[in-house]
Amino acid sequence: METLATFDTVNTADCVESCPVAGFKSSMVVATYQLHKAAEFGGTCDRRSGTLQRFHLDCNGATDTDHADVTVCKLEEATTSSGVFDIKWNTQAMNDKAILGVATAGGSIELYELAKTGDKQTLRESGVATDEDTDSMCLSLDWNNRVHTNAQPSICASHSNGYVSVWNVAPQGIVHQAKWRAHDLYGSPIEAWISAFNCHDPNVLFSGADDAILKGWDLRAGFASPNFKNTLQYSMGVCSIQFHPHDEWLVAVGSYDEQVAVWDHRNMSNPLAMCSAGGGVWRLKWHPAESRKELLLAACMHNGFHVLELVAGKSSLRMAASYDRHDSLAYGVDWWQHPAALPANAPVIGSASFYDHTFHVWRQPLQTDKANSAKQLPAASIPSPSSVPLMSSPRSDSHMLSKANLCSAFVSLARWNIFNKRHENPKDLQVEKDADSSLDFEIETCGTAAVFERLPLKSTRDAVTWRGTRRVKLLATVRKTHGMVSH
View 1 (spheres, rainbow, N blue to C red):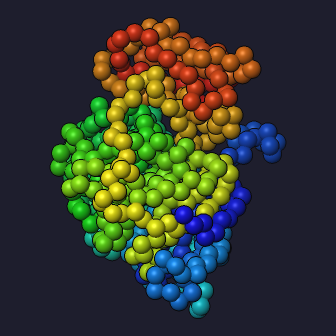
View 2 (view 1 turned 60 degrees about the vertical axis):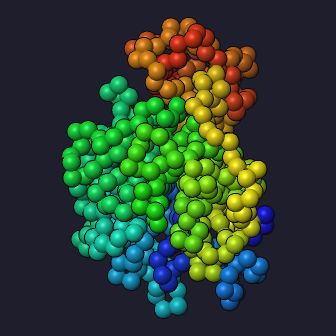
View 3 (view 1 turned 90 degrees about the vertical axis):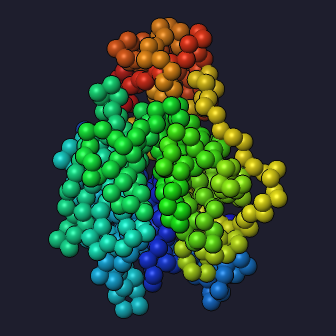
């Protein structure tokens, strides 16, 4: 493992995207999200800010980066209208410019163009579309032309109120096409963390949310009901989806329950391969080169960054490389698509972590020899509630709690598998108490409320036990009774 460069992003960093457009492939953008509490600036409500920071990779004339003297520098920084939750490049140029889509906490989708002016390249805003629900945050976005070119591509976006929207990017701007409630929690809004187009069929997209359900949608069939929904595979929120650019039937899905699953989307009953990543799987990226199409890059929150390899006839996943030199939540990661870096045996990777606001550039030789079966990752299983590690997500309302090392108790308590529609007496749910903490939460479960006082703040794996033999779905909304957290 070799760290090539590290940078302080100043604001908390959560997204990394390498530009795939010819002529701009030396660029990688890191996005940030910063929550400013009202008390910090004397305001009446919290404020969120974001930046886009562009970095340049120079291979100094080398044809591959395995042993080259690689240098990385920061070129520029743009300020966004709000904190950034997700960024994605359009894979094809528009008017000789590379276009970056940005999903913001303010609910908007913003477009930035990377254009050449003489010998320089500059990133600047070129368009914006705002959701009519001003209280909704835009959590993810994706383009539908990653494989098939389209002069007027579409963007899908997922929102914090459970909606998914589709927008057309036309010369006159971003035009709204459709919007529907894709996910809810017994009729109440719930975060739709991710939506992604099938890059081989622009009419099909998948969505995943805090309800622990994965759904598929066909834009031609309307939105009254999904083509399919998988309600039993995931015990916690579904937060990452990426279709394979070179194998039209494969899609990778990640969850807060630490599972990475590779599916043949013609059969969404059973995954082809699964593994436990050791942390909530916030982002997944297939290798863009067909020669390396078996490789899958994963940002695993509390367990760093990993390169996984799909082996044994696509039936298992094994570890090819790992990077653990970040000191905080692993959120943003991507393969650097520089022509010299992409085909290398030691590809260059950019990764960003949240609370320590750092961006690392690194390379490590990939151990892709199939004989290394001893490094195969353990098969994933659906954890029981007593063993589920509590995760954190980059949402504004969770940041103060996470700083105190309460890793999303309000998220984890809300996602345990469906085995019955009924639920236990709330008194059967025991939460470890800590006399030194002072947070009060109210947990509403299907109309039954129970208050748990003094949730522990000192452990990243808070002790939550489950009494009784009946496993049920306990879907909850959890909020700080005095307003710090609303969910």
